[in-house]
Amino acid sequence: MGRINQQSHKLKDGRTVTIRTAHENDAEAYLTLGKSVMSEEIYTLTQADELTFTIEQERNWIKTHIADDAHLIIVAEIDDRVVGQLDFMNGHRKRNSHTGEFGMGVHKDFRELGIGSFLLKALIGWAKNHSEIKKINLSVHKTNERAIAAYKKQGFQIEGTRTKDLKYPNEVYVDTVLMGLHV
Image (cartoon, rainbow, N blue to C red; front, side, top):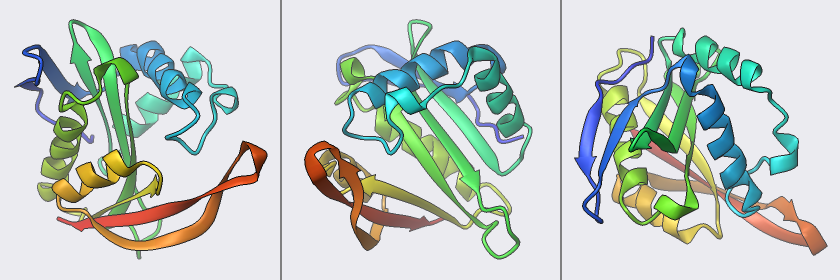
């Protein structure tokens, strides 16, 4: 099972965040947070109206992923509230099973406190200790400069760009930046 040791960190505002492996009971909070981030319509590929999972389906998704040693789902929790999430999946073929991609979200009311960095550090630490994972990949909207800077700070490098990869309303196109980190 993809698991991390629970960690506690002091945030920039003095509060404490706990980073831990997700469990099935987090399904509702995980789904609610995902929909909240998606509803902002600026950071995610999936739009909020496309996320149609029920709580039971989310619970099963979490259960399936935590049963796979090369997948990881972690959450950031403040005062028993899930405020951040990260999920990592490795490739499904022999030739790419040593790599994987992740998605991450932090509730808008809890950004700029260091939560994203703590989630990333937990993922990187887990990957470095994993016998199979050798590289972490991600894709990010080119307009999300704050995220790109945070990824670079953790050692990720830009490996390419897919131009006009995303289409927003009114025919506005955004490039996708591809980044990677060898662990």
